[in-house]
Image (tube, rainbow, N blue to C red; front, side, top):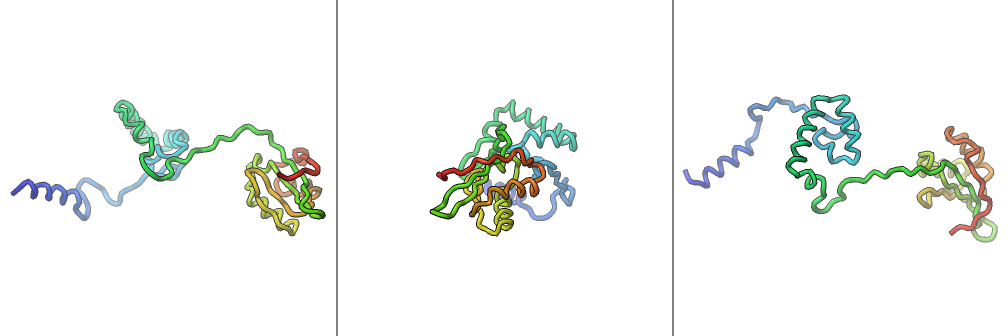
Length: 189
């Protein structure tokens, strides 16, 4: 038997088909209730701290095992290599922290040509309202075109500013009519 034969046998042993000794089938995977990934992959999730809290509450044995593995990895100094992206791909998604912006909705009218105008609504996203859904609602409610044009801006074709003071609180109960501010006629930039 030569060295090549020994190397081939060890590779063949590692790549054997069928069940392996010492493994119980079917293999049971444990999933995190927060990120819905297997618990081994929670560390790659942007909100890893929340995953840890969930694991500590619902799976204390697995949480202790992961905690011991983290401490061992920190002692080895391999933690930074694991977190940093090496090549290609998007890497970890960064969670945007919401700024503490005052909750108010601004409604204004802007001229569009000589006789036509548009109504501009800003501030709906401070109430965690999906702007696409709101634009679709305004378009069907007022039978006109409506679109999301900026980070927090919806443009409705036509002058429907006065109607919005009744429609917005009616559709979204968390918005009070006092929060809606009329900016009057504005020039669009």
